[in-house]
Image (cartoon, rainbow, N blue to C red; front, top):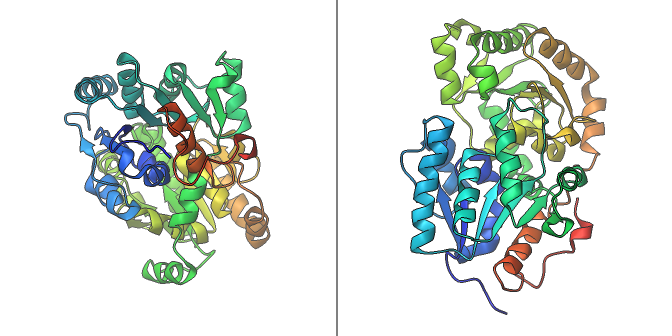
Length: 384
């Protein structure tokens, strides 16, 4: 069976969620994967130690991207990617999601007429205030193969005129990644002890999106509600993104952290373990919206809009910062064990855990070879 040559598939990424979601695909590609990290979110806490934990090979790093405005990030990454792809053209380029890194990778592939595969295609929030919405729409127009995680994502693409033959229904890679990296029961129990919490007896929160951190009023509203929940007697664990901490300090909101159990950013396995046993999760993360459907836990999403409506019907509530957050959190907490048991019994709307294998098979075909690993990937019709 023909195999892809070493470093012949460029996997362009730049943020922690991309590292997580592409882990199993990179593993399946093996030596064929050439991971290119734009540095959009490069920080040893957020990306560096993830490489070791997730088993991702040492990437090629770009420079001058992290911490820059959006246009500068895309332009700087695009120029360096173009030089890389010119010096050694890959057989195919992979991007995931809707980051600036993904858009730069898609534009670089298009400029050099390289086959482009988009993982997690077809997400739509209908919110033009989100830079990510513009990124994902542009990437979908450029991609040769669009890997839609759900039937709704596929329908979005068809409605926009994307030819059906370019769309593959694969499921979302997050399902297999969560299953692979969730620590076993013994390790989870040890982690709960280490953080001083008991199963089903605490709230886990994350806050990092600009809509909540760049507006001091919104940031105050979120932290005020978390503080009130902690005052009610529910311990609140808050792994704090470095950028969020800086915004809290600049806004003079440090006293609102006094009742919260603030931690450094967590490793992925640790985060999954704490999420698995939280009575409730409060977050503005897109990835957490998917992860809770695998872990079977309730979530309150603090955002103006979401591109993942599949999680909203059972697992999550979408709220704005302020009293609405507190009301939704208390309502979810009141439902207690019965609600958690119901959610744990539901299948994830994001697929069956074979998305990475399907995508690896599509990459083999896109690059002009047969599917990677043992035979062809499962039929697309069985996905999601």
